[in-house]
Length: 277
Image (cartoon, rainbow, N blue to C red; front, side, top):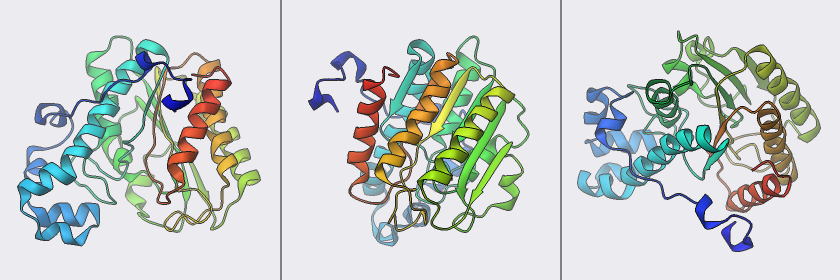
């Protein structure tokens, strides 16, 4: 994106690794201690060989990059409030809750970003999560189960991981998709429900989980959205937020094909060309 010279250098901020003190705003000490066991990290990240590595290697090679992405989401929350928008090219660990990781997610960055804003930034007392990753975002749903300050909209393939029935109770606007859902139906549903969610409650911040695992051919998502469909989806969400002057923080979350990085870059360039960022 910066190669296209469309994003000025002062718009690119280096993420800072989240410290234990940061993580303890949401996570239990017991959970953070569990991550000192390589076997636990292997289970959470679903990378079995990690179980056989010494934990200092796991901390450095596996968890530190995840903590840096988590720090990026926390920073992006503050930047979004200051500047109107922010994108963390990473993060979106939406299967992790305060005391349990899973599905590649070891830290609850979405919960953390929102809690940080509630506690430390004046004027932020309501948040909306728009989770458009192909999977249900059960981590933040469990964390905000009884918190009426947080409105959750979740659009996901109903048949795949995690199928967390308990967490679904936290979703205010639930859109369950069939296998192989394509652009037309998908974009129409996203548009209708994003508008509906923001008309129902005007938040002080939107956290947009922009997973690209909805892409046709993704080995895990089971949906059939085109690259252009993903670009349009992001446009729909940003237009809804920016037209209402609601700060928006985007995280990139899941996407398990080589070409997803290019699609994310194309989408950011499109948002820039449209004057939405």
